[in-house]
Image 1 (spheres, rainbow, N blue to C red):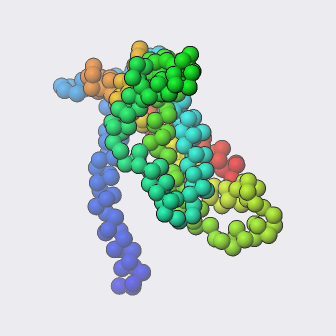
Image 2 (cartoon, helix red, strand yellow):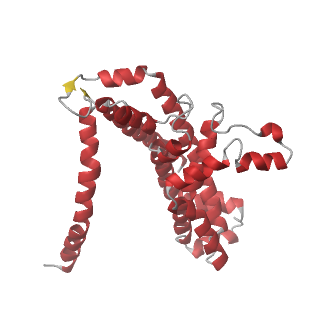
Image 3 (cartoon, rainbow, N blue to C red):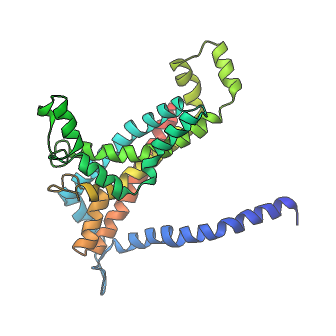
Length: 290
């Protein structure tokens, strides 16, 4: 057997266990959930086929549209917040000094923490009586700015988006540092000779080279924001009055609180479809930009 064929066979065999696990625990459940989305099923007993009724009820439910709007707020805040901040930090912390390594670890630390811990920390920060944020505002003489951050429907989604973004900047920082380190030093020297320095180098040299990485990070932001769940459940539980309800919490409540498993399956399928639509739009827009 040729060496190249043996190498390919080894790669296939090495990847096969992971692919099988991914197939059993990710791909098959997606199709299984899509199947039950056409049924009225409470998790036990016979499932009654009802066609598209679950989707019709979903589109007529104002809570679903509120959850979708809240998820779109998270998507926008992630793209506007996580990607630029991670790229800026990557540019600042690119040099491999001990101080930069320490700062990279500090930025990545929230990703290592449990999402429940992150939610509890920020829940205490936002607490209207003992919260650190209101106390700092009072010390600065900005008492009029203090409020119940997680109870005010006008701002609570923006308050929730901050800890979610804070916890997810770290991975994108590492991705951008890896992309920047792969840029040849000769390209930087040539750009410097041509007068491209500072922001001009960033926009006309660096960004075009790592644009594929930027597109991937935006895709990850979209998919991550649409499946956001833990932080909101810990901090607000989707309340008050569903003002911080997300598609994932909406699906969870319907499936495991009132036992509408067929309806919850339809919601999970809708989340996948919305995610695919947004990712497709992202590729169309970023392809034109690139």
